[in-house]
Amino acid sequence: MSEPFSFREIASIGLFLLILSIGIGLWISPYRIRRTDKVTGGLLPWKLSWTDFGLWAWGMFVLVFGVQMFVYTMIPEWFPEIQMVGEDGTPTIPGMFFAAVTLQVPMLIFFFGIRMVQPDTFRFQLSPEQLAPMEVVGKSFHLFFLIMPLVWLISLAWTLTLRGLAQVGVPVDLEPQELVQTVAGLSDPLSMLAFFVLAVVLAPLAEEFIFRAGIYRFLKGVLHPNLALLLSGFLFALLHNNLASFVPLWFLGIALAKSYEVTGNIRVPILIHAIFNLNQLLFIFLQPPEAALP
Image (cartoon, rainbow, N blue to C red; front, side, top):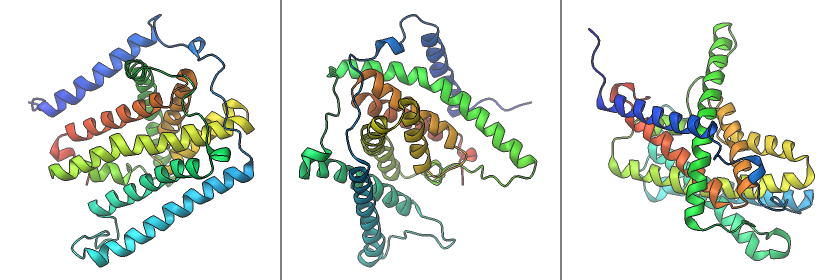
């Protein structure tokens, strides 16, 4: 006799079916957001030369690299009790947390700092279409439910593809992201809260300002719009450095850029990204303890 489903398993299945049913319902509904709903005039590109964009990207890299080197050098000196790397050479929970924070925070500081220092070159209107807070929430949830069934479908197809390649001897890495594995093993409420803030607040802000408002809008001005979508989404997936989630994240990056394009307001992709990450965290926390990733 098979064991009954646990509360966590029932909640996880229920959440999946709820999101899937709402998404399918919206896709077949005449009230879903369509391409013809695009804001008047569209989302203008970020008019910047390749040289200035290269300086922008280089400056951000230097700041991130510098902050990470400083933190990883000084934390063990100031707080010897904090282990950044385990005996096996893999990052510890504090190490993963500091790695993420020292990536996201410097990106945000640089993005807004350079806009203040050099407004004539690097400042542009982030949200040409002004939306009321409830409009942002409504459009964000609407688009999230449209995107998620496609993300799951692409994720399934990509997983099956990787498993097929592995079966014929192609060396592929099927492990999830290290951060996902870390979150799955958390039991301390304070650590869970810290990673929640990181995933649901900090990461969506930093990544949407950099990849959608910055990279996508620059590429849109120098490349074909469809190529700008593909390339910005590719770079977004590349940042996460994980083969198992690469194609689904590539699609997600494209979908977030399209949501920005359609609504003309940067707060929409930020909120969609936050809801997506919250959804992923919920599925991780709802899995049974015995199924938690090592």
